[in-house]
Length: 245
Image (tube, rainbow, N blue to C red; front, top):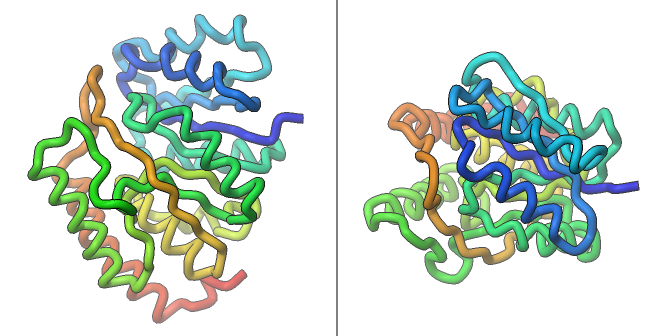
């Protein structure tokens, strides 16, 4: 039985989706893929549909009505994965900013080394980011420093979106109580797993900005992350039961 599921949320990723699917399926070991598309107007879902017969029982597609946000897509995917008894559940972008070959390293960090959450980190050894303007590099780097300061977490890349969870982590977290939808979602999930005492390991990756398609970053997403960190810290102080296992 295949125990690994890669969740790929999409919105207007027509240029990338077939290539990323084929790359994941070419890797050693066996991964399944769940694409969660928010009804992309560019026809991303149709590109996935074309591949379903070729990758029967390995590739799955769920199309949602309208653009509902990254966080809600992953929560949907987590529940989907738990219902189908996957043991290792991955988050990965569709645009090749995450190198699919690193999926194997993330998997082994949990499956062989015994960690509960493996994070592909850009900031363990300096800054491993390619093709970002300096302003965005600095914003991301110091955003993680800000999160560490407010929360007390030791994680270097707090907004990272390339991760492997053991199913026990997702079973322990009340997914219906996860509130954020943008980059704050990534922080909230790490913070909750950390507060619950799960073993977390960062592995160094190189992040390469997309060469095709368009970025989904916005001022609203950034603002949610800045304010969300303060809210997370407050909740951890006044509602400690939420973080108990």
